[in-house]
Figure 1 (spheres, one colour):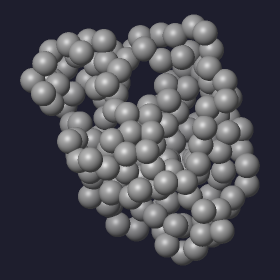
Figure 2 (spheres, helix red, strand yellow; figure 1 turned 90 degrees about the vertical axis):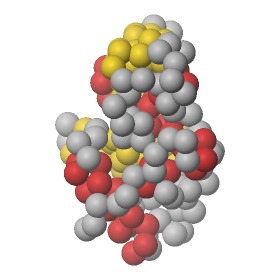
Figure 3 (cartoon, rainbow, N blue to C red; figure 1 turned 60 degrees about the vertical axis):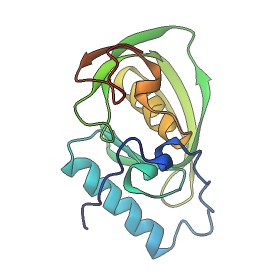
Figure 4 (cartoon, rainbow, N blue to C red; figure 1 turned 45 degrees about the horizontal axis):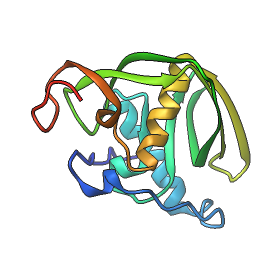
Length: 163
């Protein structure tokens, strides 16, 4: 499984709303290999999540690092967001060296499909909830720098210190 090259800001694919995966194509060798390669890339780059556009693919697909291991999520959507939010530090593989505070919902529920096309529901709080929101932002054309309230390390790509 090769480590895929990363897509970096300001690549326009990072700003695109990604195309839903056709579940009939999900079982193809091409998509299954992409899932494996994205997982390998995420771990090789010391990430805890990765979205398809971060490796140059226009597909609604992300990999989450969970306590049970890597979890591919296909065509995910958030169906519940807690009222309470929390500010915490985030970074992004596509914007190396930049970290900042991002306000996210404390708990969420996400519905998606697994790598075999089976529906999955994930109820998450804490870091996993933050990770899911971060990766789903990628699938909808948003970056953590769009939501940062304060840069904590590094500089914003446009040279600003605060958003």
